[in-house]
Image 1 (cartoon, helix red, strand yellow):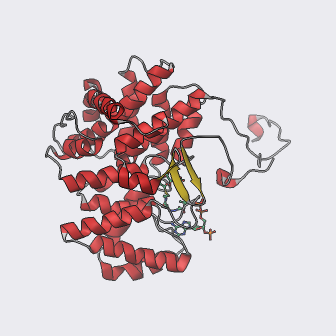
Image 2: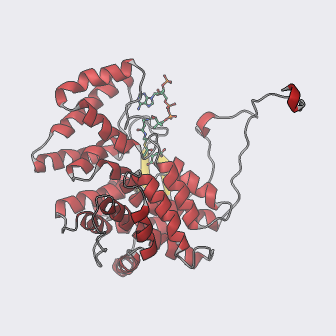
Image 3: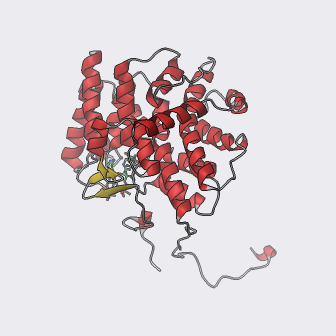
Length: 370
Ligand SMILES: CC(=O)SCCNC(=O)CCNC(=O)[C@H](O)C(C)(C)COP(=O)(O)OP(=O)(O)OC[C@H]1O[C@@H](n2cnc3c(N)ncnc32)[C@H](O)[C@@H]1OP(=O)(O)O
Ligand SMILES: O=C([O-])CC(=O)C(=O)O
């Protein structure tokens, strides 16, 4: 038995949700470029769950369900108030989503009907949790979700208590579309492994949030912003990046296990970053990002991934840096839950093997002789 480090290139399941073939990403066979231009996040969530784009009445029904479920149980809000104010926002989300299960009587109902309902509920409630935690830690009361608005609108509204700007809503909606699913990425794999034991959907999503938190995965978008802040201004970019590369340090937001020719989502986020920079009259983060790309691609051949330009996009939207990864979770909840439902439909325990590299032929020596 020989291990493949990081399971690179191992095909671990079949899936009909999203595909990455020759560098092209599709959700249910539709190119991400098409979806990014022509579909809302709610249409994409429907597509991931049900396998087809909704017609108007199906979309209206989903929007109604998302609105109806968006408020989180009072008990969970009370718990959020007890978290230390400096709690990591992904740790807070992981704990809060786990808590949602305690307040859902159907948490352990494994029927397909109950599971799809819980998928929609989790999708509706994660934005509310993220916004509520953000306000509570600043000593503010959470803002109750609005009915009849999109997830992008509601999230920005619950974060600030103000009606959000249409440009910001559109940009966030497009970012949510771009992050919704990505084949067998680490957090989706974690979700599938968890539910393949026939554990419940909340356990699957809680595992996924834990996996997304790390800086080699979703946590990279926050790490990109930390880097941009450390660099400080355009004239420092070159010396900072050259020093990092000379020290063989990783540049966050670059490289990808699956894409070697470039992440097809990055160009949309780059465009958004440029347009938002122009609109707000502050192009510095965009220009710094482009310069970083020039240097890293030029010297290492590494291309930006989905996390790189999302950092400047979210900062231009005035979203706090440590909410970038929770926003990724808001979007990816749709993909995670679609994969969980798919796993339940055709389940088998996921249990690979390990190549043993420890000592052999050992014996227990009496404790006095150790
Ligand atoms: C939504 C997402 O999860 S997208 C990914 C987000 N993560 C990041 O942006 C973090 C930075 N990137 C990375 O760490 C990696 O490129 C990953 C984790 C995305 C992919 O990892 P892997 O496929 O395991 O590649 P691995 O880490 O083995 O890198 C291969 C080589 O490229 C180098 N490399 C990879 N990414 C980078 C980077 N961002 N900066 C500098 N060098 C890099 C590695 O140092 C390694 O070099 P070596 O062979 O000389 O040791
Ligand atoms: O697929 C991956 O390894 C990481 C990624 O880009 C994602 O989850 O969107």
